[in-house]
Image (tube, rainbow, N blue to C red):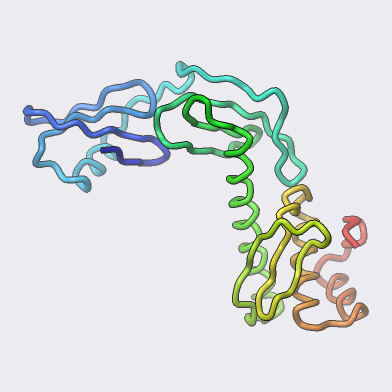
Length: 206
């Protein structure tokens, strides 16, 4: 059995001694424990006695090309692990922990869509508050290529290709979607852009 704490994995091994011991120099660690310890007790022990992490001793490789998120390039560092895949975003790099023979780019694609969706949710929540408009019932992602978004009833469906824009452009597009959702005219929409994002014309979105 495995448990995860702070992006580290621990394989639980029962033994006949009356104390707990953590072995390993990097995730996945192996934690030996008496059978009467429950999961909650083990997690508490690990948090109080975290293992010494020696990540740099673990074998890794780099992807040949950087991976772009919101027009920002990130070096991709790939670590080999036997645990389920995890991805960490750092200030200038992406760390991928994956099993051998797994398609790294496929993992990154799925992960980047989650990243985009979470960013959209944050922006939608912000504009809901600013515009006092809480009528949108759902936000979705799709592979549409002919437009940045589409209004479907009380839902907004955004294009997955928004991951290729920077966050300022993305923010303007979310605001534009709100304006269209509220059936604002072009003149009314531009007045809102001017109020909240005075330099919106510089973003080359519309």
